[in-house]
Structure formats: structure tokens, C-alpha cells
Length: 491
Image (cartoon, rainbow, N blue to C red; front, side, top):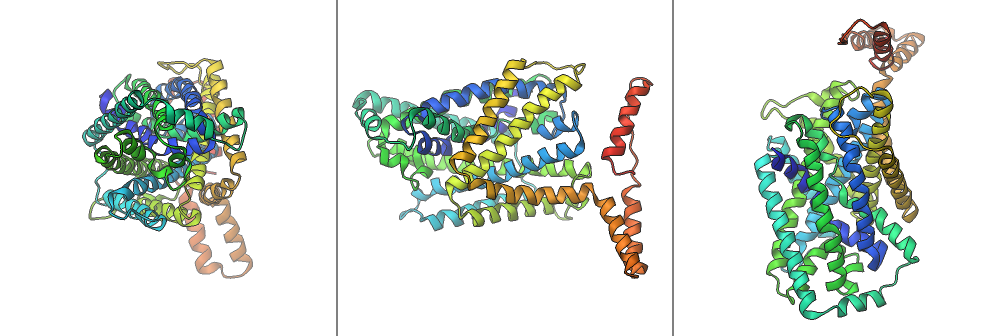
């Protein structure tokens, strides 16, 4: 139903409030609520962009499926690589902030090193859940979603009450004392670029659209948009109105902005702060679980499409789960933590680059769908102005994040290149095998290894392809034949 479908993706997108407010405030200062409001407008445009693509092609896969049906399998594979990186960074950032919000629950807190290893423990815990087959339950996700929204509502009410009873002195002081490194325009712009991080998860619902009833998907987008429309700008403003500047701009405190809001909002009473921490741990761990589930589905689809090696489809005999995908994802996530040193700014920057790239390609997929597949039925149509403005806004956000901290490009490139090398080898494995056979012949060691390579090459080209068409239109069948020749490794 609509509620359960919303809850699974809703936990992902609403959990971002725990890390977006602090990260955005570091860039935009007192103007961060304005940056948040601009992000809300951009995602209002993307509601119809996503809805048009997915209702026209109601198949799991999101942007990968959109590009697969409008361009080549190679281009779709590039987008899939970005999606994998987006899932990877989502898991790492969510686990990192879950560990950060857990710190106040310990008598002496947690050091940065403690948060680092806490992140690894959370990633490992979710890996074990997936290995034993305990993936997401719609009922559990629904309960988590209700609890999370209730806690956020309680926090907003407490902060508003505090503001009404204590006045706006803190807000006034913050506005005077807060000095950003840029003028007002650039502060709002860079705040917008980092605040885009707060809408990660918007694409999640597209990855289980086949399990949703007809007409539900656009409603899940509407419901998710309303949730961030209400809470993200409001809590961003209340943070500035309640907390001293030092509690927001301190990078060590950016893990716990909502915790501190509850603490100061109740005049340093801790009961709501504890609830905030527990909620953060639950919901952010749920976001990590969503990333694992999303990666499992995407890698299985790519392996079935022969974009990734088919050994990823192997299942263990105990729980019948795809252990290579799960363990490989955990190892990549752990390596990202070690390479970045668990630095919030770096992790958030890589996360935003991957996420915005996927969003941008979704808009490109929408444009190509309008041009190439006009006759496909869709329940909702996004206007050209909305698509172009949305795409431009995402490109501006991507550029802004790179300008704000160009070091994130190197970390992004390392992991994206790693995925692309695997995909390149898979797409060119027949040619590579021919080169290997040629080298073996020339070096006169063809007997054993060359025969095995030749056998593998024949096996790769032995797959059958079936194309269904409504009529015998020769032009359509010609296009289908060309697509098979160029994408299916049969020749």
C-alpha cells in the first residue's frame, strides 16, 4: 500500500535531517534555512521528472533502467556505477552519523576514533543481517517511519515552545556574530549545494516499483517531498534560533545538532535528547540496511544483464543469500572509511557528488524518453521547463560542491574508476579473450591456457536473445537487431 511503500524510502530521506542541518550550516551559516528552501523547490520539480520516467517504465532499476531503455547498455552501465557509488556513500555517511549520535549515550562519550570504529561495527552488523537473510520488512519500516516522524514533531514543538518563552535573543546574537567566509549570495549557494545531501533517498522508491500497486509510486514521491518540506527548513531555522553558534559550527558537534537542540530546548534536560539519539541510531541504521538492499537488487540486475560477473549471483547453501555482493559492499564501505579517515566533510562531499550525478542522469533519461519513446503511456508528464530547470539546478549543485572542496573529486574518482574498470572488462571481455588467445599463440603456450580461453569465448557468445514485437515492422526489427549486435556480446 501507499503507506508501506512510502515508509521504506521515507526512512531513508527523512533520516538525512540528522546530518544535513549541521553540514549545511557549516557552509551557509545563518542563511542555511534559505538554502534548504531552494532544495525543497528543486525536489518539487523532480517529483514529476521521476514519476514520468518510472510510470512509463515501471521496472525496478531507477536511472539504470531509464538509460537502458533510451540509450545503450554501456551508458546505462555508467549510470549504474554512479548508483552503486551513491549506495556506498549513503551507507558510510548514515553509519558514521549513527555512531556519532550514539556517542552521548556513553558515560564519557566517544572520541573521534570511537565514532570511526563504531561506524565499522554498524556496517558489519548490517552486513550480518543481510547474510542471514533479514532484509527490510515493510511493517518494520512503517513502525520506524511513524516513530521517527513523531520524534521530529516532538523536537519541533519543544524548540518552538522554547523560542516563544525565551524570546529570540539567541537568534539575534547568532545573526550578528555568525561570520561566513563568503558574501550572502555565495553562502546561500554553497549551503544549497551541501543541503542537496538532505534529499538522498528520493530515488529509492524507484528501485522497488514492481512491488508497488498501480498509481502508488507518484504518491510515495509526494509524501516524501512533504516530509522534507515540513521538517528540513523548519529544523534548520530552529537550530539557529535555539543553539549558540559554537554548538553548530564546531565540526565535532555537527554529528549531534538535533541532540543539542533537544538538550537546549528543554533547558538542558536530557530525556528528549536520549530519544533523539535512539531514533537517530535506529533510522540511520535502517538507511544503511536500505543501501545494502538497493545494492543487492542493482548488482543482481546488472549481473543478469551481463554487465557484471555472474558469480555475484551465487548463493550460499545456508541462507540462500548473495554473499559475494554483501561482503564486497562491506569491504568497499570500510575501505572508504579508512581512506577518508572518517572525515565528515569528505564523506558528505563524495556522497553528494554520487547522488547528484544519479539525479542528473535521471533528468537526462526523462529528456531522452520524451524524444525516443513518446508513445509510451505515462501517468504523469513533467514539463520541459521543469526538466531543464531541475537538470540545471543539479549541475549547479554538482559544480558548487567541487568548487567548495575539490579534494572530494579524487576520492570520488578512485571508487568510480574501480567500478568502471570492472564494467569495461565485462563489456570487452570477448575482445580481451581474443587478444589473450593471440598472445598465447605467438608465445607457443596455446595448448592448455589458449584452449581454455577459446572455450570461454565461445561460451560468452552462446546466449540466446528473444525480442517481442507487436507486428512485423522491419524498421523496428532492424533497430532491435542492431541493439543486440552492439550490446549483447553475440558477435
